Length: 346
Image (cartoon, rainbow, N blue to C red; front, top):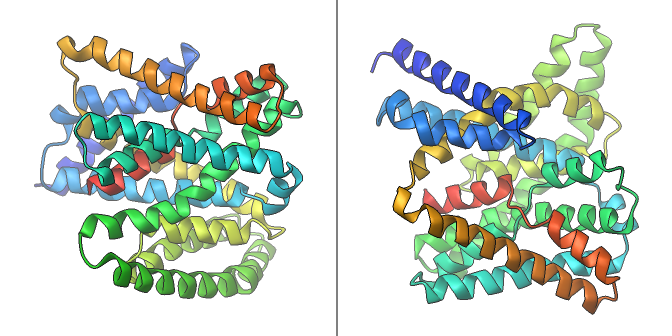
């Protein structure tokens, strides 16, 4: 396929994602919905199989790496500790409880236990971006349910790290004990190397780049840090996004975290729509006859998530109103749900 033809198709797909993303925001929804619709409606006509789809999927991987890198930059262990043990345990029960209930339902629907568990884990995840936006718009960040939502969302983000490590190993069907042990050793070595680089080398390079009074250099260094950590993780047989997330978490303690986040977010904005568009292309246009069933399934999944949070909240003596508000704010699924399902699909 002509590379310029592939580029033209990607531009058209990004244009459709932009228009539908703006339309979704005008309707009070998240732009991600528009990105997904662009892939569902136009993917089969704009990017076919072969080279075009491969380019889109590669660009989507870059977008996911940038997403997890910025999420890692926003993750703070100090902030999580400040929320208190009750919120931390609420997040643990939310993840385990939702995964168990959904996995049992998926198993009853005919999936094997591995696939059912992955589906349950994906449903358990919520969008940190959407949740924070909702409570920020209502000036509820410092409320009891706002702090609970932030704590649970942070724990969900942290749970992605081991999930992205275990899913590819479990899907291989090999001797999982040996493979998992080798992967854990590789992960520890990778994190140790990343910690040394991100703790001492990267901040020093960024300070020097910023001191050159050239705005392009800090952006370039930030991109190298993010994509380089992804490549390092992939090169040792681990998930590429795992390296990006780990690097972001380490740099979150750096005084330059805000600057790095500001540098990387514009890059993420250019690649991330391709990820959600590619997910939309995999989904395709749902049959009209099954549309009512899909809507009913979405309602059931949301109700399960709310019920699990409410029951867990009451178990830890949260007021009923706080537990219900927390459950409703976490009822949606998030970006990491698509990341986990995409990893399992591959």
